[in-house]
Every structure is written in structure tokens, then in C-alpha cells.
Image 1: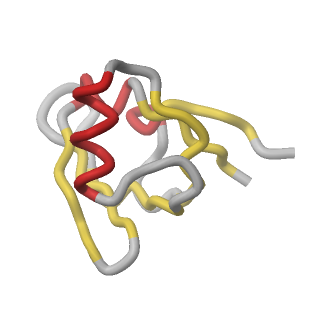
Image 2 (image 1 turned 90 degrees about the horizontal axis):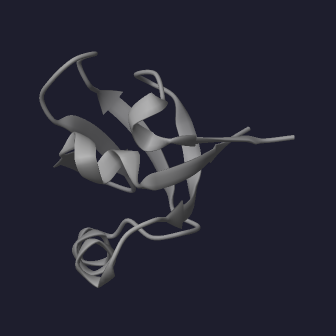
Length: 78
């Protein structure tokens, strides 16, 4: 059974499927334009423990996201 965690809580190299995005229209539109939406498989590439952006890979793309946005993206981990 998959567990659901925030994108910011994943470890580097871990892969999962976006389950939900908790936020307003702006966050949904921003992530949609980057290709991150429910059902998309994402991999956390890098992210330091305390500060700085988190790099997320999806498809052939890598995107740096702020920690605030990553806290609002829930991911199913198998």
C-alpha cells in the first residue's frame, strides 16, 4: 500500500506519483504550466535539509521548486 508524503519530505532519488496539490489557483496554475499535476510521476533529485530549492525530475525535465510549494504537493510513494 502506498504511503502519502509531501514532496519536501521525500528523500533524494525517491520516486512517486503526484496525488494532490493543496493550494489556491495560483499554485495549481504554476505547477500545471511546469507539467506537474496529479497522476504525474516525479523524482526528487536534490534538496538540502534546511534551505534552498528542491530539484524535481518529471519526464525529461528537471525543475527547481521552493520549499513552500513542495510542502503543498502530496506524493504517493509505492
